[in-house]
Amino acid sequence: MVALLERLLSKMMTRKDYVATATILNHYWNNYHIPSEEMELLVTDFCEMFSNDNANFNWEKFKEAVYK
Image 1: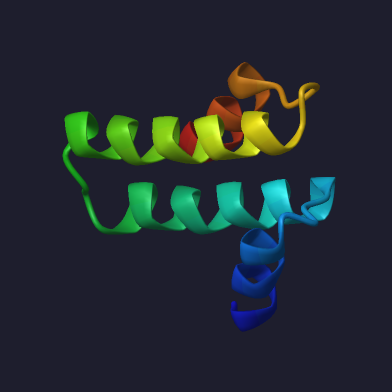
Image 2: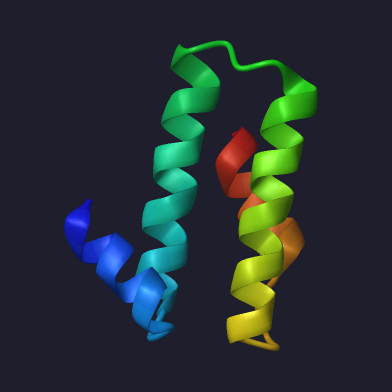
């Protein structure tokens, strides 16, 4: 977890970081019953951050991974 946060802060994100983040969010979505409105705000914030870092970032693919 610390390594992921360090990469996020240094803006050296890779596909591996996006997958790890989606996996963590998916875990919380499926196990902690976060209200859908709040979860969508959180996922959107991550999508915005990732797309600012990488113009090829795919919001839909990320959201599919989070909500599967």
